[in-house]
Length: 196
Image 1 (cartoon, rainbow, N blue to C red):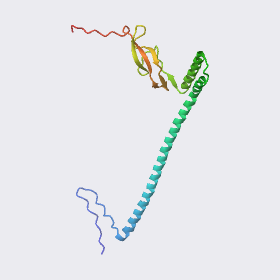
Image 2: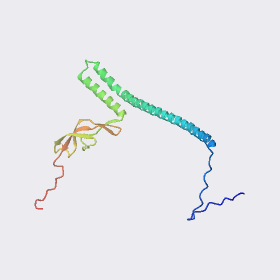
Image 3: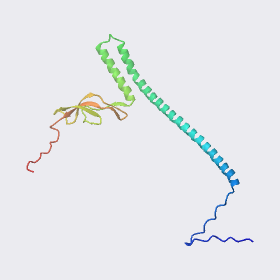
Image 4: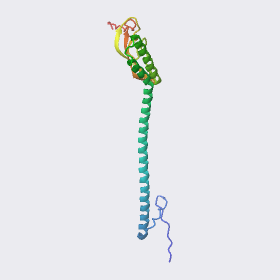
């Protein structure tokens, strides 16, 4: 006699019927299936591990190569800078090789060498910081002395003691300067009323 299975009763709240129970796996068929799944997962894990190790090695090689290339670029830039400045150095050696030169010849040689040196620095992007006669700029100038004077406007650079330099718009060294302090040109401070 075959009995008909009746559908599972719905819950009192009107919820859908419960799902049928999972089919039972017989123990003798479960073990090989689980072993196959485990073996497949372990093989996949091994492959992923190898891929990870290769990726890590590739990244490490990339990092080393990038550092090496950066160091080479830095050396190449320094080499070019030295190549630009060597002619001025050569002229100094030539001047020292002629000990009997007159003071005027030495002066002309030093002026020529200074011009070559300045031109070499200009090719590298180095420019002097303008200072004398200009308003004091704390971003470009370093004041070493304030001089009381009525001959220049207040906070004007009177004298450049050491030249400052910029490289491609960046300050390498500020100009060391003397700055005017003109009490007559400075605005008077408002007097305080003693009656108030």
